[in-house]
Every structure is written in C-alpha cells, then in structure tokens.
Length: 239
Length: 233
Image (cartoon, rainbow over all chains, first blue to last red; front, top):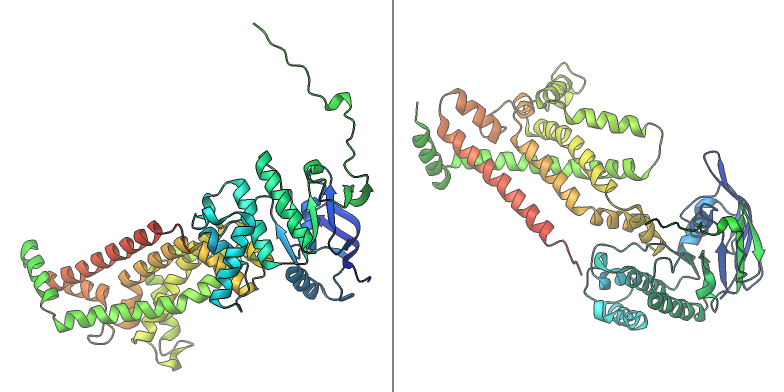
C-alpha cells in the first residue's frame, strides 16, 4: 500500500436478503482527499459508508487500512479507531452541547485540558452561544455543527459523511462547507455521500457514482440532461 | 375486633412509637428486596441489551418466554422454588428453604422478567444511532453500552421501581419460601397476611401505610428524576 493511501477496498460485496446492494467495490482513499459518492436512493451509498466506518460488516472483500489481510474483527477495530461516521441526521446525546462535545474527547485528558479543547471546538464551530443548550433541541444546522465539532475534537484520519448538507438552509450549508474545508485542511480524508454536490464543489477532489453495485468514476459536477419524462407534468387549473 | 378508626390510630401509634417488632419486619422486608433487586438488575440489563441489540437464534422465543414469565403468579414461582429447595428436591442439600436467601431467590425470579421486559422496551426506545454514534466517536463496547443505558435511564428507572414495587409487596413466594418466621423471615406482606387472619388489623394497617408511603416516595422520586431530565451537563 502506498504511503499516501489510507484505505484500500477490493471486491467488497454486501447483500440484504436477496438484494445485492454492493457487488464489486474497488476504492483507494488518499490522505487529505475528499471523495464524493453519488447515486440514486437505494444505490448503497450509506451502506458503503457504514462499511468503511466499521459499523457494517461486508459479506466479502478486502478492506485494508495499512495492516494487510486481517480478520474482520481487527479491521473493524481499526476502522472504528480511524474513521468517524456522521449520520444524515446527526444523533445528539441527551445532555447539553458541551456534554456532546466532551464525549468525543479521550478519557486520558485532564479536566483543564478537556475544558480547553472544548472551548477551542466551540470557537471553531461557533457553538459558544448554545454551549448549555440541550442538544436534543438544536436545529438541523446546529446539530451538524456539533457533529463536526465532535469530529474536530476526535481528529479521525477519515470522515464519512452521509448527506451532510441535506435539509439545510443556504446559510447552514455555507457554514458546513467552511467547517468541512477546515477539517480537510488538517489532513483528514473525507468521503461524502451527496445527491447534490454542487455546493460542495470546492471541497471535492474526486467523484464516484454507485451504479449497479459498482463504483464508476464520473466527471466532477456534470449536470445530467433531463429527459422529458423527468420534467414535471404541467399543472391544470380549473375555475 | 377493632373498628377501622381505632385500628388506624393504633397503627399510627405503633409506627411512631418505634415498635421494635414492627420496624424489624420492615427492615427484613427492605433488606431481602434490596438484595434481590441488586442481584437481578445486572443480568436483566444484559438480557434486555442482548434482546435489543443482538440477533441470535432463539431471540424471539426468549422474548416470548420472558413475557410469559411476567404473568406467572408469585405462588407458582414460590411453589417451583419450594420443590427445588425442599429436602427431597434437587437443591435440598443447600438447606435454603425457610431462609432469607430462599426469599431473595424467589424475589429475583419475580423481578427478573419485569426488569428484562421493561428494560428491553426502554432500550428499544433509544435510537440505534446512539450506539453507533458512541462507537464512531471512539467509545469501546462498554462505554457505548453505558451510554445507551444512560439514554434509556428514565425507562430503566421505571422498570426498577416497578420490579421493586412488585417484590416488596408480594406475599405468595415469601410465605412459601420464607415460612413467615418471626425475627427472621417475616416481612411486610407475610406479616399483614398473618395479622389479618388473626383479626388484628393495627399492625397490618401500619405495615400497609409503610408500603403506601414507599410507593408514593418511589413515584415522587421518579417524577423528580424525569423532571430534571434536560439538560444534563
């Protein structure tokens, strides 16, 4: 494995019942790169991200994060150590924003170090005004910022994001993009599943499309022409 | 026979005069039930967790068996353990019948299904992303487990109170397994049953008041706990 490649995926397959979601996944993830996964709903983007995060076990194939061919149990441990998966709707633990940030810190830190790191993360993500707010009561954009601040605190080598800007307003999308850019600048590799990557274009280095269970290289941000069947039918108004 | 008002006045006098026998019965009741619930909680919690998060053969059967055990009367639990612990029974050599340990075993058997079933329901109510988020944020299985328990704490507390309420007030298993021996295995429900059968209601009412106060206190604690649920820093 080359030095700058963090993760190699070969012939990964995943099936749910009779449905083969991932057929032959081949992927190399470089350090500090951002990779966008495209594809329609149900194409397997989330499943692939979850496999790469160690949250889902593939049926077959090789995932190598630098240790070569080892048992899944050890691969999963390595993936859990090295990656962080962000759900489409980030989960907030029952507690304040501060509590949620503190969770991402290792236990070995002293109380002062913890407070310092939390303060830095709050400043980084603009969370200080909602420091003591219950995280369950946050808006979608605020939740996204808390989850990215947790990533900033944890500093994984790879960040897997499932539709990070879905259901966000323009301002929240802009802030999310800024935070993701900042994370990428720290050397973190990003893999993001997104239907609409245009507003993340400055971030993305490579676009892949999940098509029939395989990853296909695509031109970045190519806008597919719509066939007449994709257009909405004209509405009829009656008096 | 005393009138209800006389019995109640006498009951309050017994309670507040510090009647040694009465308070000894209360002490035995609490000790036995406290030990039983303490022993039952860890395996019940593990069972609830396994039923919620693990997929293994026989899982559905286990859920059905546990649900069935919920409705088994205390006397049937008492009878089963009596047969096991009696001198001719397979565990007769342990000589546990008519001891507090036998009462503890009976109460464990009664509280376990409640704790496991209500614990399972409480854990099912926690979003699965809680476990995954904990793991992906670097928590090991044990820390992720404790995180999920924390997320389900109100439901689990309700399970604990329901189970404790059931065992401290049950009479069948305690009577059969403990034998209602004064100064040793006589607890609140068996004492109430005995005093009522003798037509002496004062002590029974006094002990009943203790159970009512206990039920009220436990519920008030739960309400207070739930009311302070958000936020936690």
